[in-house]
Length: 211
Image 1 (cartoon, rainbow, N blue to C red):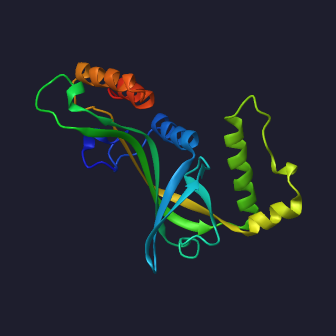
Image 2: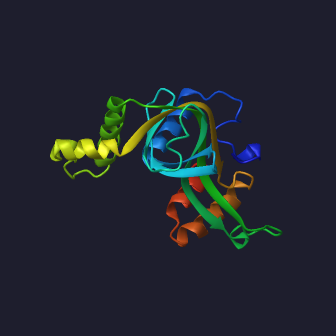
């Protein structure tokens, strides 16, 4: 999380989120659907890049291959998950005001919590949830379902992975979108950024930067 409170979204780390704020964070997880899990192991800190699924009640589910460096050590301890949204370099020339420096704007969410290993039934449910959510984004494509697979082959693939669930104890979101600049200056920088093709970040700077 960014150390400057101006960039903490939606509030400081010690504040409770209201329903709309929590919904926005849940929507970010669902939209991106991919994160990085960090945890300590006897061989030092390790990270895994994984699809993630929020249960909507304060838990984040994911799975790792049995050969992953985190698999044997992540359960029954604390872990950190980072979900990255759009990001972009911002040139000081775009502001139209003097004495500025280059910076990087970004949207990110850090989630910290305790991890437990899931039972096989829970893992299979997670796989179904992940495929259903992501296949739905491909409309009008007919959704894929594991019913299309040979059951024995599916079972073997399930045996090669381990499911986990993290109880989220801390939500630490950052929205660094130029909120520390006057609105007209931010709009000018966003327009210049949009012209380079970084439309997602430009849109966030225009629509979200004043919140």
